[in-house]
Amino acid sequence: MAWNTERTKLLLLAAATSEFSEKGLAGARVDHIARSAGVSKERIYRYFGNKAGLFYAVLGELVSRDLEVPLQERGSESLSDFVGQLFDRYCEDDTLARLLLWEALEGTPGALESNCTGRWWIRQMDRLLIAIPGLDRAGAADVLFTIVTLCACSPVILHGSSYPSGERIMRDSARRASVVRAVALTVQSLLGTSTS
Image (cartoon, rainbow, N blue to C red; front, side):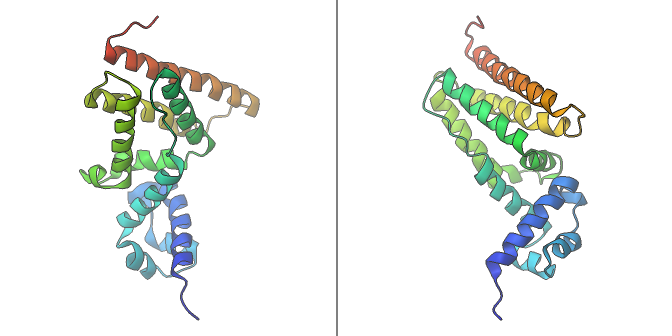
């Protein structure tokens, strides 16, 4: 019987997503990932090089799937839509938010510039420079950092909250509006425009 490489990779990525999300890069165990996937751990090394390679493969899959939120050409409405959609994605499933935070805590210094997350940051900064006339590159980085911090941290920090489901939905809606407003205020501050 021929070995199904693509299926094996998918099984490993699924198992690793769960393991890394829960335990981070340092806490995840290759043996546990392989066992959960139902394959030999040798396959991890063959397909991904090492545990860090597997971590960044997982992150790359999720970033390309979950963070590609459209940012239209120009204007505050477009930016608000972008921020709101990103917030919604993180609230629907906090897996990517957790992985991004693990990457920030445990990632290799300098790795951000060369991996999928770094490429995503650069694309989004380029989009922000188009969407917000008058913003410079440092400002775009500040705006993006504000967006990601506010959107990603919220579902992770409140992960175990005991809100009843209806109250949780109302809180998420209110928090979403607050995040959108905070980003708008950040942009106004950077551009030196009025907040009224």
